[in-house]
Image (cartoon, rainbow, N blue to C red; front, side, top):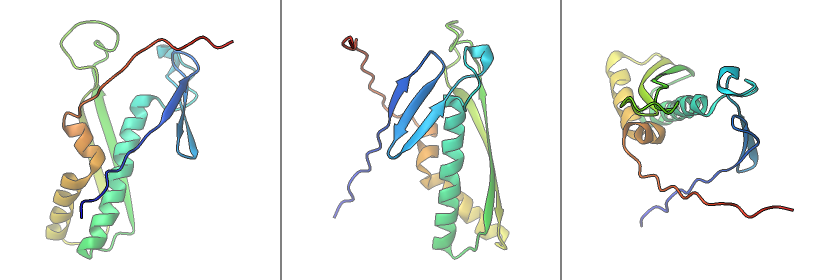
Length: 152
């Protein structure tokens, strides 16, 4: 029997160029931009959320797969750093892609596992993390932009 597809959906209302509120299930996510980009620096930026989503998924997958492999893990410390050339974002046609050009991830796993176990855990986490997969591979994006009806 084939597993049903997971379908995620969020809804976002933009309060200004830089500030937005997203409903994600029962949760509200606030996003803002730094002052130098027109925001008030009142919340993480959408780009910060990409890094956070990646770290959160890597954390989940590390614990999940370690349990499958019988590797005890008590904690992870994860750093995700992204490098981005803002020229395309700013409307300059320089050939750089608009998103992160690279991501650097460090996962420190609090575990008594040996080097071979850690190598297997790393391979599995790299292969199975959905957010890593979305960031590393092209995912088709179908964008529709239309005028909203006026509200009275």
